[in-house]
Image (tube, rainbow, N blue to C red):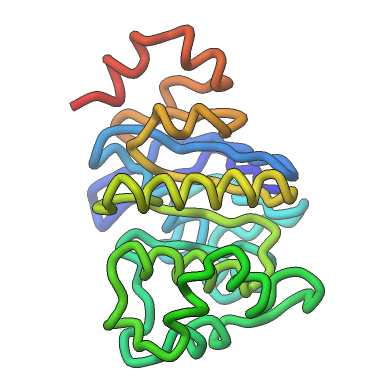
Amino acid sequence: MLHVEGLEAAYGDSRILFGVDLDVGPGEVVTLLGRNGMGKTTTVNAIFGLIRPRGGRVVVAGEDLAGSPSHVIARKGLGLVPEGRRVFPTLSVEENLLATRRGDPARWTLDTVYQLFPRLRERRRNLGSQLSGGEQQMLAIGRALMTNPRLMVLDEATEGLAPLIREEIWSCLERLKAEGESILVIDKNVDALVRFADRHVVMEKGRVVWRGTSDDLRAAPGIKDRFLHV
């Protein structure tokens, strides 16, 4: 579904990514882990064409899209739930969802998104700016699903959310996995992620330093202590 190979990226003269390799297969949930400032969001930005890679490949469903404009990459089937949610504040919940509607009408629609997040149906006439942080994250996920993506990417999936809302987001992702969605997720709540993620990729200073399954990560507590804990 997604194959990233040798990805290099920089901001001006500051090199950030050093040959990042990453794969997400059909129906897989893969995490991208690491402390703040290790290059996770830069990796996402380079995948989506929000910054131009300095080198490497970004292959989506067999087509190398590295360096393509972000709208081209999105149309190839990548859906982004960005860090900070970035919902449209002056549009209603329903308008936010309809603004990104595309793709297979038999998959994700207003009704199916509202079934996933009943709270959005209740707040469908409210503006994006009138929602709580948790409701905005639900809306950001719903907006990405309305593009009917081949792969959904969540950057800081539960950052700043209350524990109960975090659990609701995790339950949503578990349900999406059960329905066959391919997901790449960035988050700091490792214990929650190992419950349902298939594989994990750990970054340190712009490089991949470890990769493995959830069982591998459970069996290697030193990885969390060395690369993930503050």
